[in-house]
Image (cartoon, rainbow, N blue to C red; front, side, top):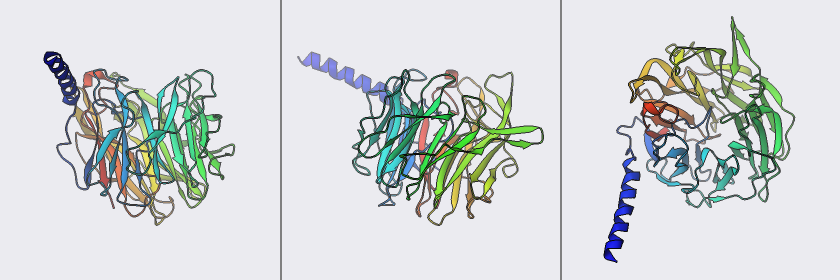
Length: 453
C-alpha cells in the first residue's frame, strides 16, 4: 500500500513540476507605474485580431480592478491544447493581484470583459459546436464565476464564436459574434435581459473572424455595435445604434468607407482593430486604417503597410486623425508580425471630465527582437493620446512603455474611467512567437497593469 501511494505521489509531483516548469516567473523588470497582474502564458501571445477589452474597474470601489488573459500555461503544442481564460483581481489599485482560471477543464479562447450591474462578465468561445459562453462573478472579486445559461444556438452548423460583449445601463448584456464559416463570417447579435437571451439576429452587413466587432454602451440606455464588412472585402465600417439597452437596433450607418491620400486608398481592417465609448449619448469610435494593397517581401513574415493611421470618428466631429507618421515620425513601414500593422489595436476610454484617451500599439524603426531561430522580429510599444475637446484634436502620442527589444501589445482601457486612469497590456518577451511561428520559441507573455493618472 505504501509503495503504491508513493508511486502515485511521485507521479503527481512530476506532473506538477512539468506544468510549473513552464511558468516563466514574474517579469525581471517593471517600468514606472507598472505592476504584474499574475497573468502569464507560454504561447498565446496573439490575443486576437484587432482590439481587446481586458480590464474593468469596480464602479463602487475605485481601488478594485479585474483583468483577463487568454493563456496556455501547460501546453507542449503551439496552438489549441491547454488554452484557457485566466482572470486576476486587485483590491489595492493594482499594487497586488490574485489570479485564477475561469475553466481549467475545457479549452476556451478569445475573451472579452465587461461589467453588468457592477459585476465582471467574461464572454469567450469553446468551439464551433459549443459556441460562445458568458460567465458572471457573484460579486467584484468573489472568484465565483458561473455561466449565464441559455446563450442561443439557433443556427445551423457552426455557432458564433469570437464574442464581443458589453453591459448596458439596466444590466442587460449585448453580445455579437461570428461563426467560423469562410466567406460567411456574418455578425450575429443577442441580448440578455436578466432572465433570458434573445435568439441570434443576423447583422448581415458586418462580418469577419476574431476581432471584427465592438459593443459599447452608456448609462442612459444607448448601445452601439461597430463592425466592418469583411465578407465582401469592402471593409466598410458601420455603426448600429440602440436606444433601449440593446433590445432593438437600427439598420446601421456607414461611418467610414475609405480615405484617399495621393495614390493610396486607406481602409479599416480587422487586423487594425477598433473600439468605441460614449460622451453623453454620442458614440465615439477609434480605429486603424491603412493602404490595403500590401507589398509582400521575400521573407514570408514581412509585410509593408502604407500610411497606417489611427482615426477618431463621431457624428459631431466627423473624421479626426489621432496618430500617423506625421506625429510618430519613427514609425516603421514594414513589420514581421502576423495579424498586426504598424499602428494597431486601439483602445479608448472616456474620463469623468469628458476627455477621451486612446492607447494603441505602434511599431518603430529598428525596434526588434532576436528570437530562438535567429530571426529578427519587430517589437511593439504602447502609445497614448488625449483629446480634451470631444475628439476634434488629439495630443502628440506618448510612448508609455519605451522598452527597446521588448514587445508590448493589446492595450486595454475600460469603456469609461473615473479618476484613476489605468492601462492594461501584454508584454511579450519573444514578439509574435510560438503560436504562429513555432521556430521562434515560446513567448513568455505577461499581463501588465500601468498607472497613468
